[in-house]
Image 1 (spheres, rainbow, N blue to C red):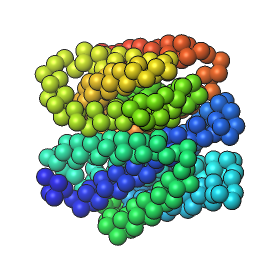
Image 2 (image 1 turned 120 degrees about the vertical axis):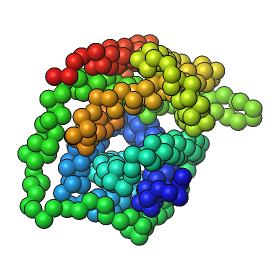
Image 3 (image 1 turned 60 degrees about the horizontal axis):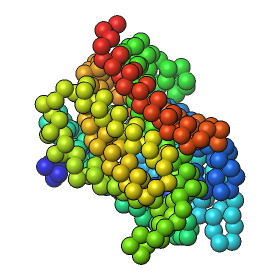
Image 4 (image 1 turned 30 degrees about the horizontal axis):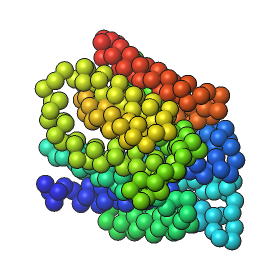
Length: 403
């Protein structure tokens, strides 16, 4: 099946694997970096600013990719990632250290990623068919999780002591993905010769129809709440474990908070990689709404416990629990998403749904900012509340009649 996919699809999945692996070496731990450089509040603010910038770039990128084409956006974004990685290396070298400039370079990375994502998604749809699209997304999801597991596992062990070396490795990966994009990705979208508006008005008009579908908007808000839970891993939970987990010896290996974060993410992603297919078959004949509610409940429970505990075994157990929840809620939510999307306006609907990833990061950054004013118990309860909100909004959207 792999060889039957369009060459663009195969290359793009390979690029996504490399890109996510490289970024997972560094960026899941940058909240810790900025907390050490400044404070928790400042770190949360910087993360939030990056998320807002990436979100706006993604919204504009979804419009821009239809105006100037997929390949130009992909190649331009990869070039920006290369230049900004060089910048991060320079300001974190053994001879020069500047967290403020690191933030500026990270901002450039997030803008580039925000532009790349909608162009990549649109290109994959361009060259896939109804027959192979499910297989394409299954392979992409599997590769994405595997690269995340490998990247965070390696990054967690070496981030504190070998940050500069990891940055050099990231640059090599970004140079490789730029090369692959330039030489092996072909344009898939014929741009009209008519003049296109590039301003804000044109972008807003392209999303106006979707905004009138209240069912879909409520469903999207539920998705934001779910992603707000997930993004605690790279925000509050990372800072919580790094600051409060007491180093311990486990089978001759000294584990600290950063390594525990890496272990938790590795357990999560490993279970997703090996259990996605069998769990999907197991729940295929079950009531999807009930499975969704159960999945989100377990997902919120696992992350809530991670935000509260500093116990090794509870961290491990929580990681297993949230993984089971993810395995249950992800396929059922995707199935319901397909039912809600208007097939005559699919691109705009999927583009708006894609914003939940950035808005979820925004929720995660906001919770990092307020975390000094809440206890770990308060953060746990807040995560539980997000789970309740996600279940409630999604249920309302599925029961609500289309307007």
